[in-house]
Length: 235
Image 1 (cartoon, one colour):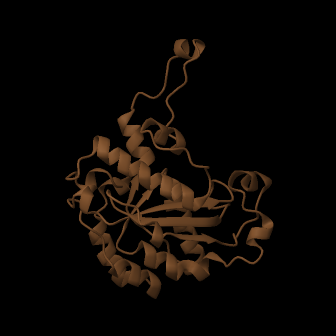
Image 2 (cartoon, helix red, strand yellow; image 1 turned 120 degrees about the vertical axis):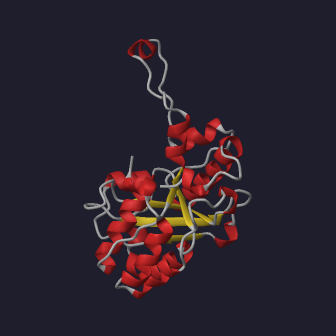
Image 3 (tube, one colour; image 1 turned 90 degrees about the vertical axis):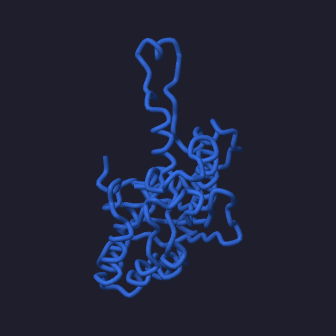
């Protein structure tokens, strides 16, 4: 289990509000973080997705970000934000096929550094919702280390992790494989399908953020009552 699972987020935010060297980060941490016993229904949430040039945050870079503020009742699409940014590493043919952001799309795009103020302001005071937290957490942390000289830490409710908890016996035996059975998938589209949510085209940062936010609402409505402490589902 990740050490993040037991992180005292309000304490960490209070410490970093004074120890961070960059004023933008100090402002972000000063906005604070809710306590682990806050009911999930009262948690200020923001669904977040980043698309990247690959899967290794030390070799690859962010190429787009989408976020949308939400809670368990509504998703505030009017406050959604979407950025295409010029990555610090080259686009590969594989990544272009994946998220359809091309060289012409990024030719005049800003560097991530120039949208950090807006990004941190949109994340301030919120708990992030993402599907497979390692991408959002590791890429943003690495990007800020590159641009600001220090990383970023924040709590995440990982909708993929919640699906993994709900379906611990996802793997199947070789005998079932021989009979043509498929292991249960906890990918975003497959997870949404289990809750009767409509299919969206994948790998657009804003669409995926929206898809992830809707998935959390469905997961909460089905498995996590409104009074569930946020500490039971974040890491």
